[in-house]
Length: 146
Image 1: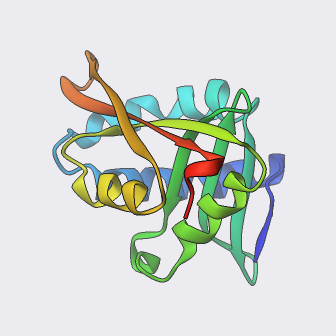
Image 2 (image 1 turned 30 degrees about the horizontal axis):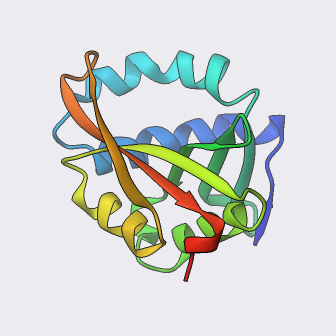
Image 3 (image 1 turned 90 degrees about the horizontal axis):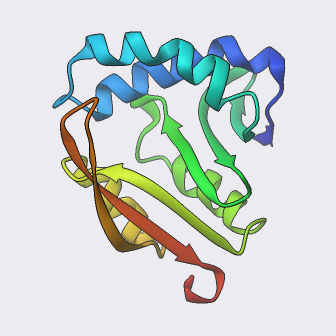
């Protein structure tokens, strides 16, 4: 069910990203995500290494790694959360990259707890001016994974 993403996946990836990110971040105005879509489409997705969870031609999740070290996106369709898709996608990239980091909103406790359970540890905090929200910088090192 996991396969390498390609250019044909970008339109459904954007739809999944928008639905999932609005669901996961109720503390941020939806307008921000709609305004961010061109940036995701034109700047972040094209150079990233992306893998998708494909169920009979329907994308139910994806993970994107930027610069061989940064998990820029991990999203699962809201109706599929808790079914192991996110864990499988994250495990897939952890098997390919020995040192990964990511940034997650502190208020997104579901994601923070998920990443912690997968072996990521908080290393720092940051502030996003655009959303006016604090984030955690989390890191995973291959030899720490259990």
